[in-house]
Length: 305
Length: 245
Image 1: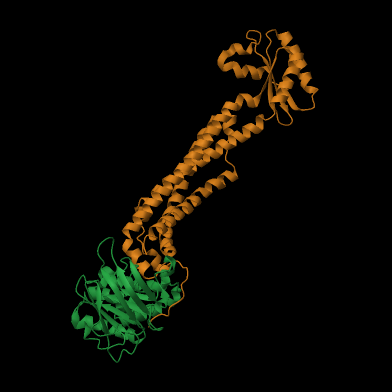
Image 2 (image 1 turned 180 degrees about the vertical axis):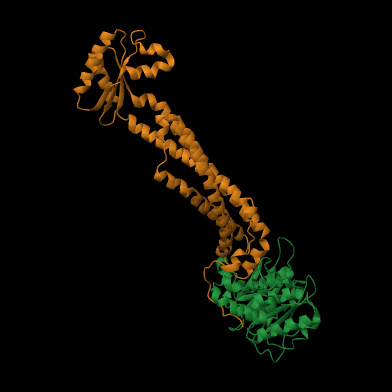
């Protein structure tokens, strides 16, 4: 008639008992709150990752890159100095490649500002440009030494590291990355606060049930697992919805940026590793929500005998 | 604290107060023995519910010592208490059934808490529901059960895990006299299997229904002993056990 006692075991309350807290599910606000948080986190994370890719690709592209301008108004003198500059770089062992930027390309670059007249090289003299790529990293000392040697041979030469004039862009990208990380941290904190409030509310509205389980010998861990499970289901539903929303937004934004056709933006394409990180956002959200629920419930239960 | 080695509960100069109010229980000392049937009586406000809360470990006393199952409960850490609670069956005055669970699941709850497998739960729970005459209402939610039926589900839940002590707070307070007698027979049957039963009631007529029962009377937070059950040496021959106030 009566079941024999069994020694205390750490168990979840399986079967129907685990449903003893009424689950609001979609009808309740929690899955939707989590969905919005996850969607925003997915967007912030993908923005941060894309910016990281932009910075990494741009750095790789311009690392060791220098631009030489030969600023000379007289075309004949300019051509002579360009030849001397090319010869200077050709003799160096640390030059991986070099290329004189063709006049047509230069004209195309300045055409938006000067119009058709830019094609008439004699009408508007433009500096000659040489794109040089060095092997190994370009240090400030190496740049200084190269500049002084070059100017001795080519007085009209202006030598700049490409990384130098892109430094403000990198600073801006870094700031945006910090902003994305800050946003993710804030969203995580907001999610924790939302789950904390939901768990507290659930504790309040289910106090009688909790007391019964407590008096029947339920441990804090068993009771916390009931809440964890409930919040975990909400978080999983919200996480899937949030991921779908976030991916939709990324897709639309990706299309918009792809249409720009800019080389810099093109470097921000997300790779497999990035998609994996984004895919883990809902999982991380579920774990965070369950952990918050557990800690909230256990902390409240400790006030009971 | 003295008391037989076979005692199941010992209170020694226990006092209880809530906050800074005066003590609701004062200088409570007694010993309970396995397989005995006790009534705890007293007028409303005498401290019966507070005493039961100490017995089913919902409360620690503010002073004194309590030993249960051979362990000093005052020094037990909080995390050790669930194991003790699983050895105590409690029938609450207001039943405290879980409203979202069926009668079956309410009765099964103590077994699930102990970690029993689902495949092993159905038979004892169905047997227990049959024992209290509710096998036909196994799937009913508490809200659809009458007061007497809820009371019987609460009793079935309290005894399903075969507790060593059954503590019942006014278990017949919400049922008609006929049902009250039936419930008492359930308690007696459980008692005959070796469970110590403590029933709090203010219904003096109930005391006569269980002839071998022992009576503890609470009056304004103090314990008296009309049947001599708690004295040493005991007044009644059939007690035959060491006890003292």
